[in-house]
Image (cartoon, rainbow, N blue to C red):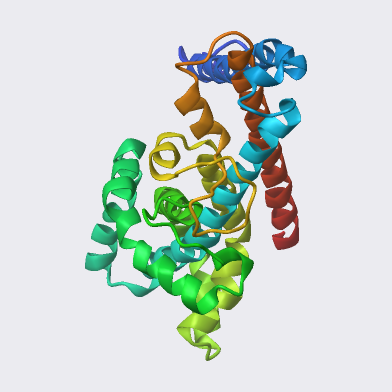
Amino acid sequence: MTDTLTPSPGLATGGRRVGDRVFAGLARSAGLVILVALAGVAVFLTVQGLPAIGADPSKLRGASNIVTFVGPLLFGTVLAAAMALLIATPLAIGVALVISHFAPRRLAAPLGYVVDLLAAIPSVVYGAWGYFSFGGKMVPVYEWLEAHAGWLPFFKGPASGTGRTILTASIVLAIMVLPIITAITREVFKQTPQLHQEAALALGATRWEMIRMTVLPYARSGIASATMLGLGRALGETMAVAMVLSASGAVTFNLISSDNPSSIAANIALNFPESTGLAVNALVFSGLVLFVLTFLVNFAARGVVARAERKVS
């Protein structure tokens, strides 16, 4: 007597469930939509920005050509984002380690929630805080830096009397990207194989030695990914920088004076409403530069993560 096997009603003819095929189709469609949207943004920025290449200097706010118009903005964008990462990354890794390995469980969970809540605060709130409160409190610090570290080009002054400097904007940006980097690195730290950690402790390693030998190497690619995501947030931040920074368009490494470079996003937000004609095209061209910069950063991040994963494997 032979039994006949009847296919399950939930299975497709090819052996795959209908739900799996529907989900695969939706996933491909979502990916295609993202690619189309990204291509559309690139085409729009290119078409609208190219006329600014030969724009008259009167449309470029005093710049002689589009390169001298975008150059200081690009410099300010990269400088503010780099300093924000320099401040936020070590702090985020430390906070993530405290939450995942050092703090008691009843304290780690609320601390994680508080850090995550920082990501829900609108950027305009950070900007208002930096403008009305934090900037003024930094004035004595900048005066002290000018007096005791003025021999360094970063603190040669004269110190700003309002505190609205590129350093203040970078600190605000660091606080904004802190929850992104912390959340990702915390989850990566938790994924470290427990057997590796227990083996290190069993061999006599201290908790810090265990973290240095097992957790940090395992999480290297995750830390790189988190840092690059934070960099992308810092590069594109608009309102907080626009409100905090007193920009003059200067290209300088002096972090505490009133002569500060602006960022691309903040410059677009401040000048777009009153711009017309080729002035709009110039702002769109600067947006194209920021778009390309962000793309290159993400592309480099993928390379860093892939190389780190190969080393771990």
